[in-house]
Image (cartoon, rainbow, N blue to C red; front, side, top):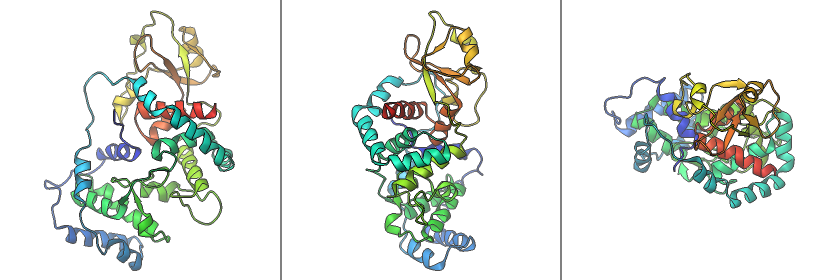
Length: 340
């Protein structure tokens, strides 16, 4: 099963807040539209030198348009693919061993980020592993061309125009265009940040005066940690723990009746939120320590008789990175394995 990367979840979440797309996606010639982008970048303070080197040869990338048009929409159907097969292929021996090697190699940076931002080192490494396989593949699309193409395409013009301008602001800090490559949808670097996310949350982790999430391990880990802190990570709480459920447990009485404003198909699968003490009174027992007053939601993704978890608010922070239960569960379980 294919899971959308974090960037695409962010894109789909922002559609509802945008003005309608033009009737024709490419409603003007690309070169004419490029001049509008240049004017906006200049108005927002990007230097003429950077504008020239980032835009002089831009042409539309048809492959980017095809990939964007091929993205699945939100489904209203019932039923979900099982979690277990996804976990088997995404939390496998190779990724676990790779995560443990990576954590060992970057431990001082990871622990420094954990001390500053309160996010466990193994969570930071697990995100890195899921986004770019610990930095081994970060995408090879020219970001300027991709973002200009997506803005010109028009379906999410407001979003991609700003991301394009923000990319030029990053370039204005001294990054070469040859380095500014990433996913077809504009995410880049080890943690696959959008340009706007980079400008807001990227961190110089080693004090060299530059937040380099492309190659610098400290900057990568500190930036992911800052993202998680900004999203509300609660220090000292796990993302979730396995739970045992009594025979004949009636999930129906505990269905979540709140419709989430963003990716509701993800959140509708979780139960109502209750304290650990209230779950214990119902016979649901956490298999690891959780304080009685912690609010948690029950999740049994593959149905009766399959593993279940009590999820804390930190699970929702992982969903902020990529709003998919498959992604969030695999990050949490991979982090647990990396921690040993």
